[in-house]
Length: 153
Image (cartoon, rainbow, N blue to C red; front, side, top):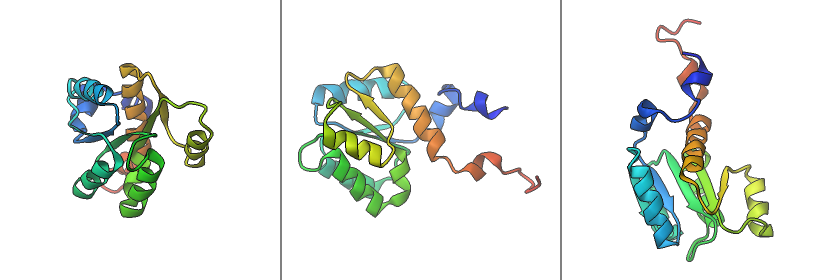
């Protein structure tokens, strides 16, 4: 199958391949709503309300996608990202940031410095699913999609 068809979005098969998503947001209503929407699409979601809880989860599990709010108590999104990058560097490419603070110079500067994928609140579920697909595509090793079973070319 051509690569563009395989990665045009999440279909039933690719959703089933996702083992876990870490979702961090300090808004309990948004956290619960997004968790329910993602679980209804067969994602396994661990939802936490701050970066300290998120770091405990990161130490226990290698998540395939990390959806992280930028401004949270205890450890904000930028500091959470930097901590994850130090503890488990491979997970740094699996981030998708969400923020209600578009235009905040500190938030915008950080997001630009790491060339991050970001969704601005309010979060639309279809947009979130499309962005999750991008994170998965960007974090997949190229050799995993190009290697021939017999090692041939």
